[in-house]
Amino acid sequence: MHLNTHNNSTTNEINIIPIIAIDGTTASGKGTIARRLAKHYSYNYLNSGALYRLAAYILQKQNFDFERYNTLRKQEQFETEEYKAMEQQVINAGANLSPIFLDKQVLVDGTDIWTAISTQEYGNYAARISPTKDLRVAIHDFQRSCIKLPGLVAEGRDMTGVVFVDAICKIYMDGTAEERAKRRLIDEQKEISGCNKTLENVLSEVIERDEKDKNRFSGALTLTEDSYYLDTTNKSIEEVLEEAILYCNSKLQPNN
Image 1 (cartoon, helix red, strand yellow):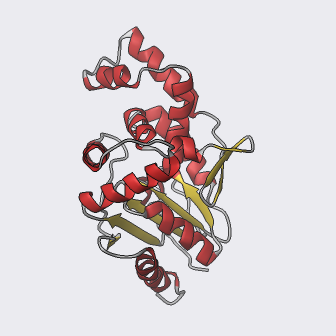
Image 2: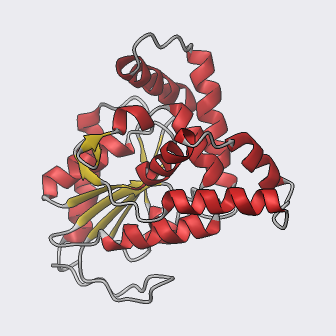
Image 3: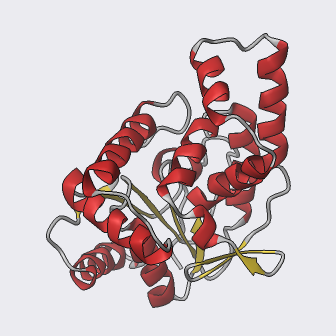
């Protein structure tokens, strides 16, 4: 086992369990590669983005106004009663989350909700609530609790620079916006019966989500200096996986 002596920025703990942390832009393939890597190494798997989507799912069922909350936050209306009430609602939605990740499934009380929350719609909802500081604290604690033997593969947007700075393997996945939009459209057409989105619609959504992720105040999507940049453009899943495994093997060897 590789001994990692990098301290976590918030916990200052010394972690001895190997972690593969993967960040990436929308529809860059990070979920697929993370699951494949977890299977390859027999590691545990964490879909961090699903946590924010799950919180958004709970809020949607409460008829939460995501656009209003986003507007109040941008206007810095933090001291108004309206914002405080909405913020507390967001925090409550993220408290005590305990989903089980099993391949592509996100199990909550034994029910798989991944099909419902994996759409770009819920990705956009998640982007509107994810800057909430106390929501991020609650979810961060759950994410760190997932570090268990024999190891962990975690994918998201702030895994390498915030949540798992002590990861021995750090990967940043990317690709052209056009190719990523094509992948997203295919996925949504498979998962949503009667999906009538166009490539132009999805491309616009992908670009918008990328901009929000890269420019948000907390937990922004960042290519860290110690991350391996993996461009998935014009590559098959097998080619991307092979490249990721070669990189991870080079870092997981005890003499490296």
